[in-house]
Image 1 (tube, rainbow, N blue to C red):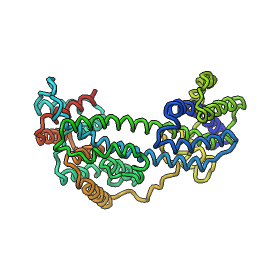
Image 2: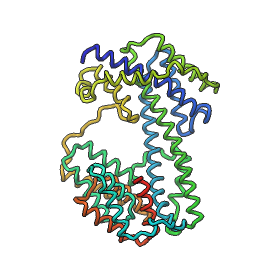
Image 3: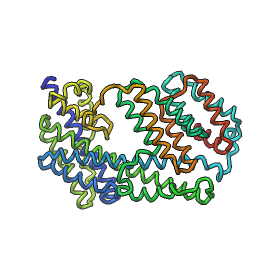
Image 4: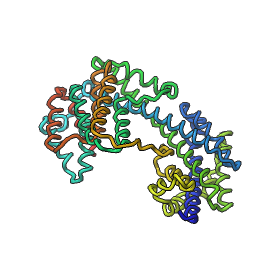
Length: 433
């Protein structure tokens, strides 16, 4: 890599992140400072750890390792919040299927249609596009919404069929899919969830205790309201975590790039003035001057364009990173600016040879065994929700459109609850737009 190009990349990255850090820190104060005190309680402790690290920048220090530690803590907190999201989505699936018991069906054609009409609509929806990727995506959507009346043996067989495409695949791909499936089956429950989010734990408890088969209309209405409240709470928590992570990522980039970047002194002084003012506002609760950010207008976009123009391809950086500290620095910067806020920064070990068929069979058997254990003791309606979520996340396991048709017909024929089928079709039509 040419030294001049490295300097340009570091300068572009530093200016881009510096400007974005100042703008987002102001936004963070608007959301978490004046309105909610120091932030939402389950995220407040993490936010309080960020401010001293930002002060390090203003003092000319670079506490990068402490910042990496905070970044990992935010990743773990987001994993806990995501696990709660998985739980509530499963119970939302159940409540949707119970809706027909308590809410009178409408008088639309969709509520009166026959299974043959439903089948015809679904197949048109799946096949009306000529793009195979879109067809597969729509098949997964359909599988995730149709009534589930599978035996556990049939379900586990379908999991095996869906996972079969990974024979001979890199281990990373298999591990990524396993993580998704375990999450959908509620097997990924990070330690400390209750302690980290006590409010969400309290909201989740009634759904875990509910008797869905004998549920009354009053109980259904109460849980529906609690589901809405839980969704809003989760949105607040995850939005704050994402904003905090963006601040951390940009501060990481500034620390990594500042010594090699060429910045105008006046520009850096303007940026630091904004950061100091916002930091002071967090301490005092004062109103920020509306004119404070005016000198930064449009700068973020200009600096982003410069970064995109000068940045090196990731595959080149990964090849050179092991023997070149500058390439390693740029590799980390590129990850931090990639748009994937929670991406791990450490190189991932590939884990040896691709997964052969024999090993894949053992992996599938272990996954099915763990899901069987997770299903035990759960309401049948909840198990159906988990099955639907798992099947819709698998690679498409049908060999032809005729097999898709047979699967859809089987789901419709095996469900005797007309109200549930009407709800499923309504949800599918909403997703279809």
